Length: 290
Length: 236
Image (cartoon, rainbow over all chains, first blue to last red; front, side, top):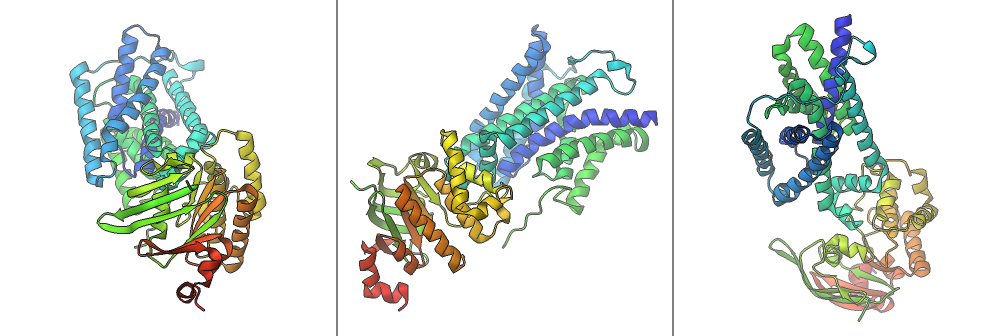
């Protein structure tokens, strides 16, 4: 029982990270109706920036916030420079651009930092908090950080005029323009927020999986599964999916199928959802009149 | 120079030219209607005015050229467009839709007052304020579209078939409010309609459009008395 509880709690910690990345995917999906395959590599690149800053002697939290800011600008720039020109291109062209971004970011990072695995610091103490034996401090800290990010994003989209304008622009760009929203900038802001959210996930997962250019490959797959399980057009669903996938992955990996097959859980979920219920648990079924 | 003036406006969708040099003008505070059959180019004319289609020719508003400007900049000059199909943000609530109408305004207090004013015009919208706008009936969505446009505090409102698909009673209510808005707030209205009789009752001036050209213009009364219009568009 203790072991199970331990796995569930550890699953919640990684689940929160999947939830953040899933949310980043959903943010971009809602505006473009495409899954940004480079989301993970963008987060990985941001994490390397944080590593450089920390290694240069900057205090952890200063490096953390600077990285989040950098990632935001980086996301905005990617949208403006790379995505904007292919905005109206066929789906396949945009997907190729996403994959190109993934490969470019991966190899550029490898080129700058080499492929040697590095340790990444955790801002949380090494001793477990309150002497509990179930969760490490980093796991508890990561859950808290994730929850804060999720709540900030929720509040931003739900209660601020800019958040409302971003939702409106993603949903109905033409009507958005008609009320005076600068739709192009809203999309860029969305990319910035997605990149910033991803960077937090990267910095939280790096102490667990260690830092290397391929560290987000698995995370992206789990996040993709999470987004699909929750319904790719539903932010709350994606967050729920993230925690669910995290727990499932951990529990199944520990007791049922073993660690080697853990990633297969994500793939089975993806295929399962796509064949049985493509709209996910909370997604909307879109009906198009032909 | 007139308040709104379009001169030799051409517009096309790809290879298909829809407007062949439309020219018309309207004065501030008036109601003008563009009449015409399906496919005459009425909707395209409205879209051309606010930069939603590529155009040639000139459009001026309040003394400045606006052709070639981005839609979101034209909106900021005070032109609100109630588009064909209503343009509802279907996944947002009724109130969020209304607030978006005032997106470019900075006078927060006045926005709150205007919100109340819209609920006063259309009490049904108040009942539905927290409801997803996509679940509203067609008539309610049209009321919402008009209110959303009014939330801009526009100087000019472009209305694309406001009566489309609505029950006669609701059309009457809606047109009554449009008249009030025009008289009390001096909002100029440019109304595109297939329902020529209703439009001519509302408007001061009318233009008749056929295949992308203005073929007849004059005061609403004169147009109503025109034999050709009476036979083709009013049906008696």
